Image (cartoon, rainbow, N blue to C red; front, top):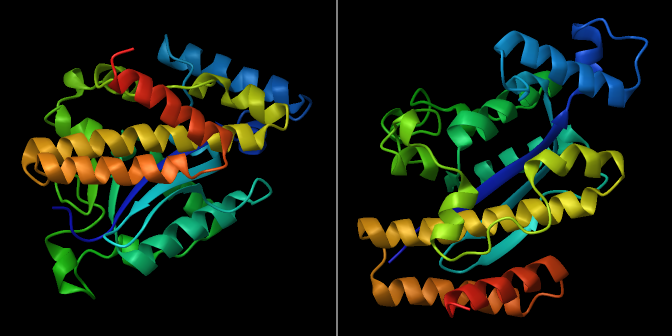
Amino acid sequence: MLSGTSLVFDIETVPDVESGRRLHSLDDLNDEDVARAMRTLRVQKTGGTDFLPHPEHRIVAISAVLRSPEKLRVWSLGSADSSERELLERFFDGVEKFRPVLISWNGSGFDLPVIHYRSLKHGVSAPLYWESGDEIRDFKYNNYLNRYHTRHLDLMDVLAGFQARAFSSLEAIAVMLGLPGKMGMSGGRVWDAYREGKIDEIRAYCETDVLNTYLIYLQFEKLRGGLDESGHTRETQRLVELLGASTETHLTEFLRHWQVDLRGG
């Protein structure tokens, strides 16, 4: 049986064209051309990937599943109009309030480093998150920062045995487990959607990612003995009921696709 509070989280980002413009002396270019130039320069530097360095990402959505014995909720922090700083402050406010186990897919490799850099940029304070035992003794041996501690569970990292050559994508594992996986968007399309003002669609996409991650987490808890068969069924049913009661199209669509997969159809 699961105890305590868990917070499954995911971020969506776009190129930080403001910083990119200054960093690469691209003052005469518009945002679209700056983003294109940033990626081109990245390919030239790496010889292959156009994936930008962590500090050059700007967060436009943070979504979460909050699970406790009393509560189950899926949502995106703030609103479509929230600034990056507000999203970050809300994220760390949740850490302070609930002291949850943070759960992610590649959070150690991407989401949290980006959150760190962007919080540094905006001057966001997060003392509990950065606590390592100086003020709270329990955090010396189990904190959010140590890769091998359990206050943050990066499912990709753990399932791969902390071996980079064994890493897998969220999509691949979701599909393997019969979950909906990506629905209607992918990370590579977020910039275009952002430029078109489709923030709500980005937030919806991010929420389906955390739902996939949460269901993988439940399966992982069954794997390591945190849930038995009946416990896993109860937790799954809680989510089915939550999604079934939703009026949000992307959540009801997630449930519909998930149920089809569960039936093997």
